[in-house]
Amino acid sequence: MSLLLVAALLYLGLALGLILIVDKLVGLVFRDPRSPMQLPSFDIGRALAASQKFYRK
Image 1 (tube, rainbow, N blue to C red):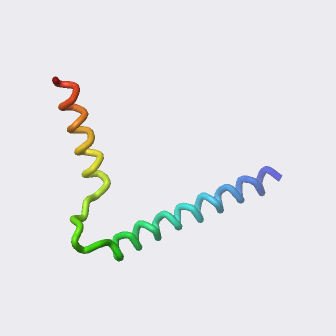
Image 2: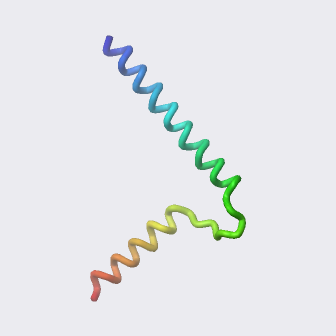
Image 3: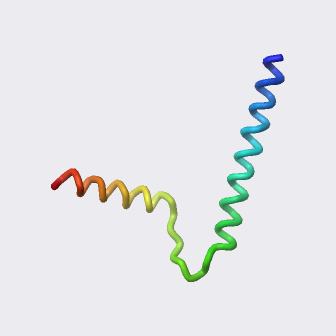
């Protein structure tokens, strides 16, 4: 029984991962061409820099 549960959880995890990958690819293809493309890592870096500035004051 537990093997069946593990297999079901793995299947759901793979299905959700595939959905997220397809969603990202579709978002890259059908994005608004007028808006500048920003990578998520850039947003994280900018937030980190802003938080470091805030702590220095």
